[in-house]
Image (cartoon, rainbow, N blue to C red):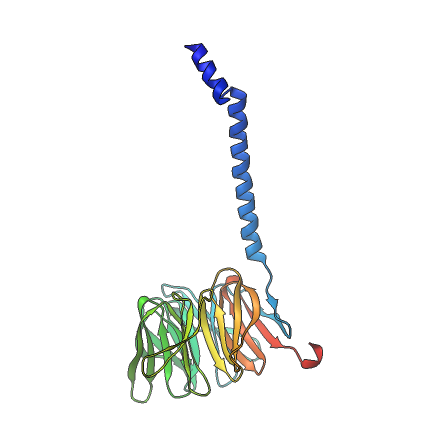
Length: 303
């Protein structure tokens, strides 16, 4: 019997030393895998942001965990949202002097801000909650939404989009009549909405990885597809700006007036709101690194 066992060990190379060697090899490979995975994740985390030729960026504000939405009021104060749920979300006001104060507390995932009628409209993605209007130091409920994320305004209407898995809506609110109109329904993870100076309306569906232009007849036009978690949208005279809300290697994109898609920044971690300051100059909230970047086009002479 012992001879049979020894024969099988010899055939399968199952001597004690061979078994220990294979076990040690397996442990070494497992350890190597952990090291490589950790190295890859660290590389992903610290991979630097790079700007396209003709553009530059700098850190405008740092140390803001869960930074998400940005907006400016008529006095030039900057509003910054901290996207926490369960009524732990905050809205900060940064005065022109640089001082920072809490403007609104008790929010649930404030993920959308926009200047609106001499105040600031605030979206809450954390459930069936109202879109709020901050003005004269007070907040007022405008309308009830369901996981509202992006906001935009053309000066008259307020546009909103809901981040829901398949039953999100694109909404238009008229503050004069208090009428809420559903412009589109059945959206998959709607995140961004933008209205251009010429009146064109765009929206993103993160779940579909695309950007569409809304059409009144219902035949919305596919503008961009196969994006990496498209999130926020902003439209100005330069074109349509898109941020990607991906954890790693996200981009800041510009679909310019000629229809050319430009990658302005690479290597972002969860890009959020884009806020224009001046032609060729804007702020970008980078949630994955808890900071706000200032992005600027270089003068022609220095390119």
